[in-house]
Image (cartoon, rainbow, N blue to C red; front, top):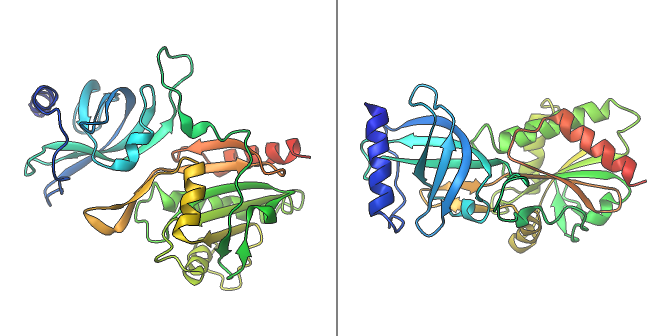
Length: 300
């Protein structure tokens, strides 16, 4: 019965709602959330809807192809036909809009063997030099891309107050795990560096980032950030770097303490050229280290 009701709502929305809702819905306390994975079949940016061929939603419905409202603005510059996505399906019988998707992640770009798949400009950086930047790290030291010349570098983006376990928390866990492995490896410790850039300069001071990083490195107050650094800069400077890597982020209109954002992790060779872009959170510390070591070897 729930499946039939949801399908009917989908049909009505597709036929009768050609414009996005004036207000972003706020989930009621009785709303239910389910993990959803699928492939984008069609995109209606103007109506803020996407047609997604999704897998079975555990505990709710079988796999099918249907339309989903998506309200976060950051999604629409990246959501392309053929992209594999994951997110949260919100089902709320107490809301004027009975269901929608949020916390969207693009886990794989449109596949090149698919016909009529738009080019994803977010991956144009591979092979290009990273533009210079000026940031302040967790120790209050000014740093730039030039400080990492001669070493393979991975850059990811976070904000310290991010509450989502599959977003910043996982990025920082992966980076801290990789950093601890590198610190025990005399062959690679001095050849590889990791950098987490905060896109929340209003809150993430160097002192806060240091405390944040210490928490991920075992809560040792004597932690030295030699392999992994965390840094923040002025809004304009961070935006410049984020734009280069195709990162999208915006303050959640319903929760000003929360930032909706995509995920980007880049690997850069010792000469400063991008060699790999990871989207989403499906990559592991081992995969990151493999790419970093390859970049270090190729950049000799």
